[in-house]
Image (cartoon, rainbow, N blue to C red; front, top):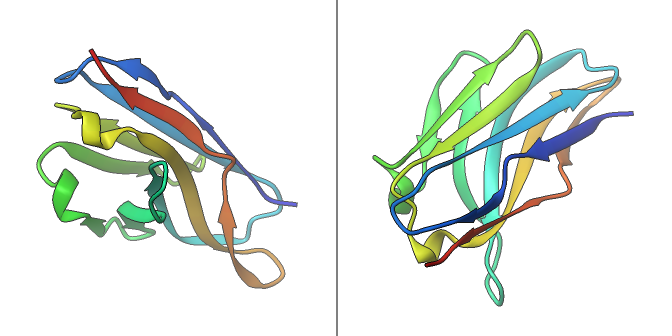
Length: 118
């Protein structure tokens, strides 16, 4: 059974920073892509950033230059460093992983709340 456990959310003032972590555990044979998505109240879930096993990254235009995704394949854990946070970044952030156990499947974490407010 695969688990993705997120941590690092919280309340921060505009302009502040947070670092999210997501640790994957279970009988994982290989992880192909890990990433972060977010969902604000009344809105659809949207991609924030992804990183492949080889280290290629992809970002939503709204977070480019402010957020940085990284991964430690040995743990395996994915991180999201969020700088210069804005109120519009307020959302539940979900970790996602495309990985292989006995088959290749998509997995989600339980979500962590990020609130940007003064």
